[in-house]
Each structure stands twice: as C-alpha cells, then as structure tokens.
Image (cartoon, rainbow, N blue to C red; front, side, top):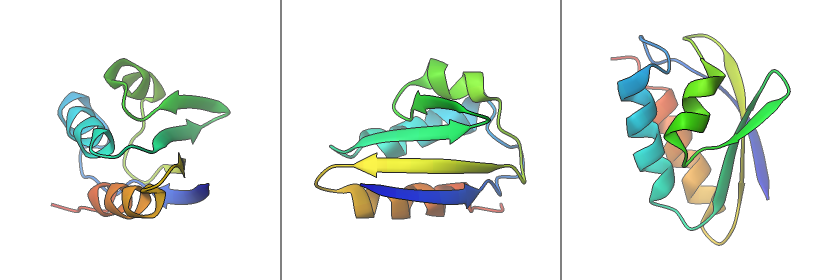
Length: 85
C-alpha cells in the first residue's frame, strides 16, 4: 500500500470537469485508490464521492493506493493534480 500527500495545483480545483478527468485517470488502474481529506475517505473511481470532497487549489489530499499497479497509479494521479495549466 502506498500513501502520499499531494497538493492540488489545478487552477480550477476539483470542479466537475477536473473530477471527471481524475476519475478517468484512477479508473485505468486495478488498484484500489482512495482520497482522504478532513477525515473523510472516498473512492477515487467514484465521481459522486470525489465531488463530495469539494477540494480546491492549494488544498492537500492524502492519496492511498493498494494493488499491483499502485506505484504507477499514485504517480499519474499526482502528475494530473500537479498540472498548472
């Protein structure tokens, strides 16, 4: 299992379109992937779950992945959340 704190750098934060894109990224992997913020944990492959977090630019989130491709999953999620354009 991998656990990593990531700062969201997307200019618009995690609004509807960026959440949908993030769920697509997470869904490419077999690993179970969860986001944790303010004591709440949601499945990163669930659009509704991710929307409930209401994350904005500059906020930190803990990403947890467990499975055969966990390393690659966390790396690519971090790359997506680090986009500044």
